[in-house]
Image (cartoon, rainbow, N blue to C red; front, side, top):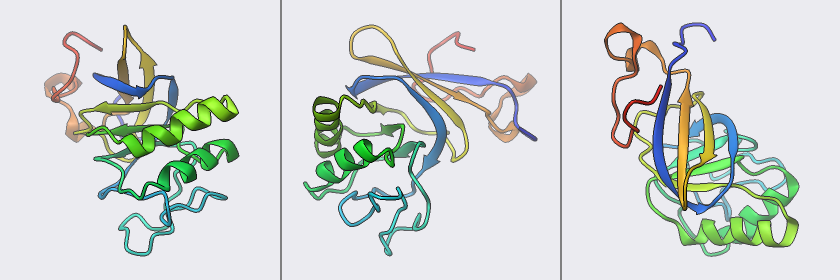
Length: 169
């Protein structure tokens, strides 16, 4: 990966639905409603008022502050998980019960898990390689690889971000 340091930032999070996933980050600038905002057959963002219109969420680690309703978003997320067009995982800044219901229902009905984690998302940019892993209890460990040089401290070490786990590399 040209121009990227091989650094890893670790941060802690809390699962809304536990699991493990990895993928390329897709950071959304605004909350997204799955109902009317995502094409369940392709994973494309189809909400014409959303600034990330045209991006595809399938297999990505979706990063956003929160979901944006409607309550039907849970059924759209569950169907996308079933079809394989959902994100591999979702990182949120705030808990979202609607997205949690969709992920839980998909795991219960189809046996397909998709981790949903609440954590500090600052410093994550689209294209970062994200790994969501299990820690003790309801805690998640999020590893971000491929930190661009402008986001590193002196000597190429990652600059600390809120929520980082001390001593991690």
